[in-house]
Length: 108
Image (cartoon, rainbow, N blue to C red; front, side):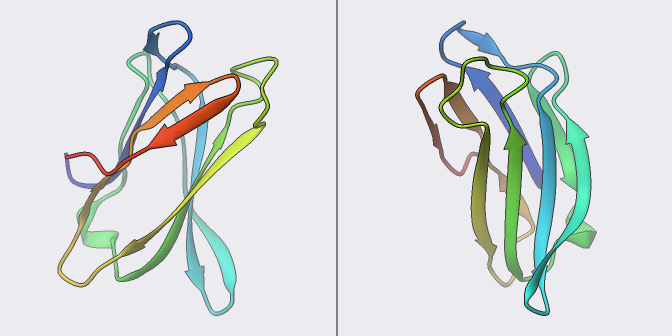
C-alpha cells in the first residue's frame, strides 16, 4: 500500500467494519478542505484514499462516520488528525472501533 490508507476493525464483533464512510481533509489556508471521500470495503479497508503523488507535507484529518455503522455509539464520528513529514508519502492509519472507545496507530 502507498499514499494515505486506512483499515477499520470492529472490536465488538471481531471482524472488519464494512461500509463506514471516510473523508480525508487537508489543512490549507486556515481551513480544512476535503480532498477525498470513500467507504470501507467488505474487508474494512480504504486502500489509497490519496495516492502517494498527491500526498504533500502538511496537516491532514481522516473523519470516520460511525453513527450509522455502530448504534448506539458514544462517538458518532472519529477524527484522526495527523501530520505528513517531508520525504514521507506512506501513511496507513488503522482504526480499532468499539461502542465506547477507539484506538489508532500508524501501520505499515
